[in-house]
Length: 403
Image 1 (spheres, rainbow, N blue to C red):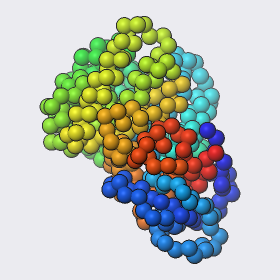
Image 2 (cartoon, one colour):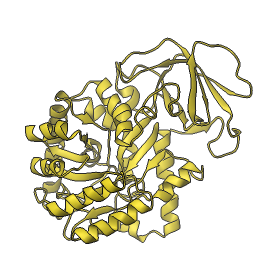
Image 3 (cartoon, rainbow, N blue to C red):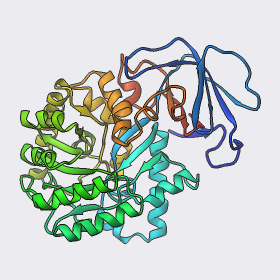
Image 4 (cartoon, rainbow, N blue to C red):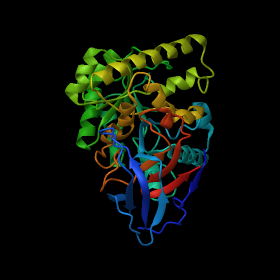
């Protein structure tokens, strides 16, 4: 899927402050599931200024017809790794910093072309990448960066090892000082990890210290966890978002509600392995483990969705698996209604990244982030999942025509 910029994001063909007028846009409201009659949307300076029935001409504006298309808020992926353009971590370590940056820029560009206008990086991206997007140095979604993944000695995904409350506080203070939006801790093992999936990471005191540092910085802690024990423990200790969480039980559900926490399943990352896109070096027993954790993940998603837990859209993809970022829609639709999946990728995603009412909605005053698709995603989730129906993207007020 390619894109034709009309005008170009970062190419200087849209004057600063110029308006964009979208004509005959039928708007899908994720909150209600209603689709409006054709409307005119006027955006300027990265904000939606007007939604009306007006047919007037806006001086010096770029006029874009969207007749017959369904307009939605730009999509939000709340669990990405934009710096992991390869699924082989040893290959990534062999890259020079400049080459790594170029590969990362391409990953972000492709995410935007899939309709993701905001992404939350869960390990690897720093705030410099977010600044580069903001300054139009690279083309990509607005980025919520959290810096490295934090793990104890012997923990899952040893990106930045911290042991003890003082060491962990010091490391988190440095990240929050530099503008990190959140911090991610690995509080259990993983399905593909040297640390056993049922093992717990960090002491209670260390987790409480991390949550306290995040509170002081007006930020929050996300946790990599799988088992019900690990999820419940993380929630009791003050973690705000649960990543993966494939083995939930009723106690977890009750704690999600009590703590007003968020659940971010990542089914696509297991599907990438099971479908053969990634995980080529896994032996048969590990692949069987992945298949079981994927099925249990569907069951946990079903339980959480029926119980009214706030669920964000996340994918956790790497390397070749990044190409199926939209397939999370169809995977979740196995147990959820399409509207609920769309809400995860819009309304709930906006809450998770701290942009409730600004992102994930199409309304006056909100950010000018939206997509237009050919078809009705409420009737057929493949309109979103397949990617082929995407026709137009407005990202921070910049239009991209998708071909």
